[in-house]
Image 1 (cartoon, rainbow, N blue to C red):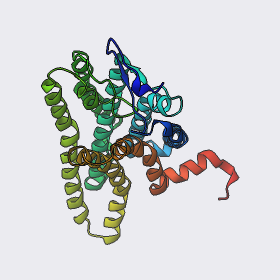
Image 2 (spheres, rainbow, N blue to C red; image 1 turned 45 degrees about the vertical axis):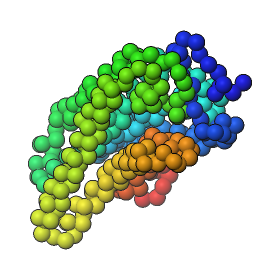
Image 3 (tube, rainbow, N blue to C red; image 1 turned 30 degrees about the horizontal axis):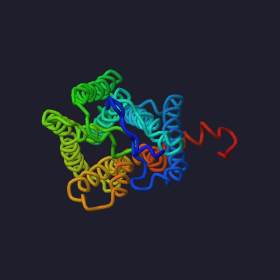
Image 4 (cartoon, rainbow, N blue to C red; image 1 turned 90 degrees about the vertical axis):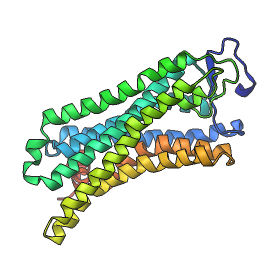
Length: 316
């Protein structure tokens, strides 16, 4: 029996959705998903291992990169169980408790990633504006405090979400729009007033995503000012080049998010497959491509990866 024809009496179980309208095609998503998750894990673990073992990379820039890699791993682990179970094993049911737990971690690590990108922009500003004092400003203690603030801010903002969802009664449809749980997706299934959830969700998005986007814009305005103040053209290009990987990471995070938001509000006439595709791109693309971008664009990372995994087997 198809999972979409199943009903629940106590409404404490949700039904996850694979490919809308084509549940028989879900299996064909299993292999691409496994490749994506494998690439995510391999790429981010390599980044973490290289930064851990190579003392030459024990600098603020690479500590923040390690935070980004750890966040990407955590975000992937948050969505992987249900994504694989839906597309590979055809298991579509998830309990309310498991659903709110998953949405807590997905939203939390999404907020952490946004905060880490802001911290990395601050790192680039300090490196370009105050190069002689870079190491004294961004000490190990300061970096640890920045990481703790980013994590605690996201946890604090998202923590009320599970409680706001669990207070709602679900007495109509229990079919979610994706193969994982999101606050706004579960909220629309409630048969009660959800204004508190909507208002809190909007405030959380403003406090994390919108605020971080504004800080990033201001940061790069200040970085551009600092770069233009450098006399040598070669030094200006070198300074800008150190920001390129971070700009790519910012675009990988915000462009799918903006695209998904626009489609959600203005693309209601589009096929549900388009909505599902954009939601999956937003969740899966940054963790896959961030390690690739930093490995290709950052010479020190690239050289140390070759050194750690190839050793003396390569020429000088």
